Length: 361
Image (tube, rainbow, N blue to C red; front, side, top):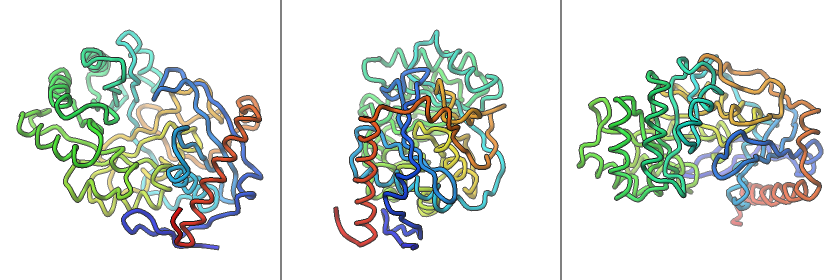
């Protein structure tokens, strides 16, 4: 049965909620090793399940509760039971993603994303706990040296205060050689982002002669009202990720209503999850920035023998991404971890079912 489900800021998307046992009937939980520590993790766990329209992914990060995880389940159900709609383009430009590594590791990371000269942009992690601004500057400078034609982006995950962000971004802008495209979520929250934009303008921080652009990530995907960023003028563009926003259709609505440029990014998805991100990027009316959907390059192993790794800076919109049975078996988790994920899915499913009934949870 199709339902119209209320979402943030009055978003409504018609979709189907299968029974939890139907989802679990063809579900697999895997643990995939990462090449480099990313977001504090060395392995990525995910639950994959098959529906009538294809494979879906449910992989909220371990610290997320049932309410937040429910949106990730909604996205996985959309992939498995509904599909992604008709694309407007066949190929998506893809940025490289640089974890908070030391300068001597930068080159090995970049080469995982293909020929360095073909990389259109690099998103560089900064404000890593335990590191300093000097570490960030050194990483930025080395990326700039190795990929002089690539656009540069700094992703702080809200790790700075405004007082820290202004001088930090000024230094990064200086070493970027005018290639600094934007700073992603330099401070936490919506109002602080708006205040930071004013502070950067007052300090005259620019790149290539224009005010440094600010992108909102967590302020969109973790907010009850993802459109508040646009209303408060807190960012120049938004980063959208399919799982935390509840699917491709809902993410499209958010972008349309925000009226800002959008960059589609990964939530450290397997290639199954990346296919949903590519589907969103393929349906956006405009795509002015390379997307952060090349993160399969950060995995030692994926769930398919043909992972979605960019070639010459682009990814083609794939057909169905089907996990390989041998890889699902090889990377399966212990029975205890599998039960933990089953319990998470059940809890998230209860939240979705309650939303359909208009109940609070």
